[in-house]
Amino acid sequence: MTRVTVELAAASYDILIEPGAFRRSDQHLARFARADRLLAVTDEGVAAHWLAPLREQLAGAGIALDAFVVPQGEQAKSWDWLERLTGWLLDRGAERGGHVLALGGGVVGDLTGFAAGIVKRGCGFVQLPTTLLAQVDSSVGGKTAINTPAGKNLVGLFHQPAFVLIDPEVLATLPARQLRAGWAEVVKYGLIDDPAFFTWCEANRAAFFAGEPAVRAEAIERSVRAKARIVAADERETTGVRALLNLGHTFGHALEAETGFSERLLHGEAVAAGMALAFRYSARRGECDAAEAERAATLLAASGLPTTLVQAGVDANGAALTAHMRHDKKMTGGALPFLLARGIGRAWLAHDVALDDVSAFLDRERRRG
Ligand code: GLY
Image (cartoon, rainbow, N blue to C red; front, side):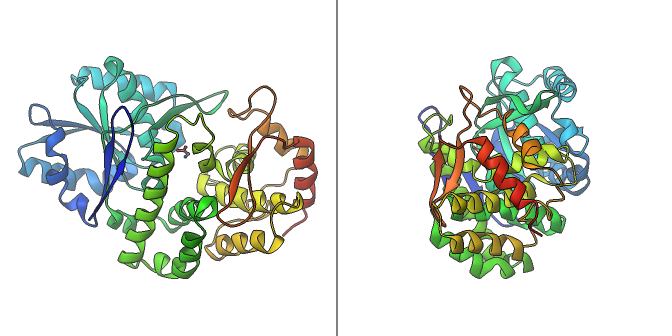
């Protein structure tokens, strides 16, 4: 069992990583019950695996679990589901001092955190992430949001959870493609500022995908420690430190937009291709050794992740892709801060990137297989 604390001025909170924790949920969650009742939000897929066992464990402790189930996928991050969920929480008597459980991946966590943040001007919530991506990234740090016709995650709040409970064993039932997509965010922490962790990822990739428990737990723990450190340094992404977590996301976002934010390209897959592109673009600018860019892409490709436009299933030119970037929510005063790299573990935030140059780079990248 490992405990990582996210140190924040207003309210620090713990992330507990414990293999088998979801088989002992009563021990971890009973303290959040009110009048022997807990409210949970989950999706149809996760409910099929986890709702009955959690209900049973909590019932054993005399706690009734009342659940709101949303459909699987991004469609749940909508005004419609936010309205239904806030209505349900009010109907069930959610209280300011109480806590709502978010049992699921990033979609459930983002929607639940947002709903909890606005019901009665702010209820507490607890993250129970069930995907690797949610465990190592979205469940930690308090970014919550829904999507709107204008774009993804454009309406939301910073609202930190009160507790994050991670059970690495839940990954046993995660589809392989989702596991690979989450692994891209694990590798990201090495690429940002921890070359030793990147080397560890290279050495332990095969064991991770083979399901070696100690390796899975270590990958999660090291990622969560990195995320907690970065969030503690810049909770609201104002100083540029937290922006480092967006490595690969500007290119990735354009690829996701081009593929309709759909199952055609998962977020983690887009981030993998985006990181490979960010490294190659950094090499094109002469700021990163081409061999380092190659090494970053090699690990991602060996992990079964896309590292080129073709592999990401994107057949668009530079002009079309940079048009998506111009709508990025990070755009300020007509300029787009851009995450580049001087090498493995040496990401930095550039403010001088000309999108026309990015467009020319992407036109060349289109020819890469
Ligand atoms: N996933 C990026 C962040 O939490 O800031």
